[in-house]
Length: 392
Ligand SMILES: *Cc1c(COP(=O)(O)O)cnc(C)c1O
Image (tube, rainbow, N blue to C red; front, side, top):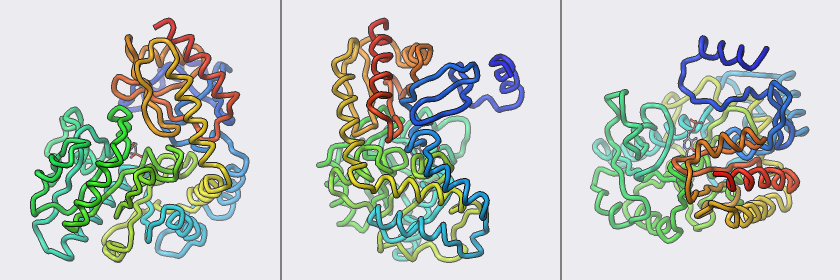
């Protein structure tokens, strides 16, 4: 099938919710993709942070294939050893007490919202259900998570949105305090605002939020859907500030390429979601968990996190010295590039033409390479990036 046939059929068959780049990807290996015309690309986006182990990692492929041939799906009406071993390991690695498994980041955040509200309802009764979220945040595309998202551009068309969310200025503890009435049950935030433009929150701010939540028995929900699973050089980005969330959500990179969402919590609300109060048909699917087990094993192997931080630092330094770069920000291998001039989208398109896939966030170029990317692939990608930035 030619590229133009693919585009024609896509327009005819799919709701036009995505503005796509002009390639159809056919296959991948490590951090290199091949399109339908046989052209190859270095991938600095990893499917928006999903392909944490790159493409076709042999151990991940073997585990997923084996599980597909053994038991692809079983209802949560029954116990399933693969799911349980994954859940146990995930709780250990994240330092949390319990997990609920779903299928996406938005679903993980939905679970977090339900969990926080019911914790408060059980303890204090009605009228304490408000969640403080931050301006410029992003928490997902479902109605509740859109309502929790602190960007006006997302609060359109789909009225009515959900009640019970107020927005505080990111990084401003006084603003958060002033917005926290007696009706507040949780604060929800990203340690590095991803879609909002790769904006890290100060550690001192995060610690102040943690202390404030403790004083008032307000649950702290940290959305690590993008920042989690080693992306920043630690398993969770919140480790950098030393804060421990009450609830933490993960998704993107956790399955190594398969759909997953996880909502974890500490002992406080561990028994809040009782039988019948929440659920998911596919959540904790055995194939997904088999893939997730490989991701956790690799991420916790000796020196893995250190090499993520190192490669992130290396990329950051190289990028900062490139032409037309005003600022490089982020943590580990979650990087945003502020350009002096020119727009991010055309620059990303130019990179693509030259064999490099990059993402954008607002007006920035955004990089989320596979955590396993080699220095050879990094150098190839950076060379393309430099040539493109020179021409912008
Ligand atoms: C991507 C993202 C989500 C939504 O995840 P989906 O899997 O697309 O539902 C939520 N929060 C953050 C911080 C994200 O980056």
